[in-house]
Image (cartoon, rainbow, N blue to C red):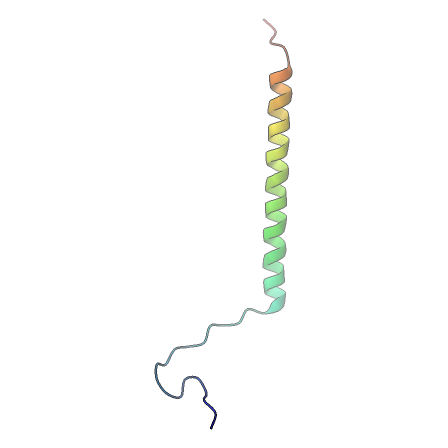
Length: 58
């Protein structure tokens, strides 16, 4: 005798499966967003260092 979900007991719906192409597209967009954020933070830090290294002209 095999047990199949949903035949007895609580009637919970199974979680919807995400297609692998959609999951891959989401993972790619999150990766690109994280990398671009790292580049922006790095450029900001470098520009702050350059600005602080410049002598003040009065």
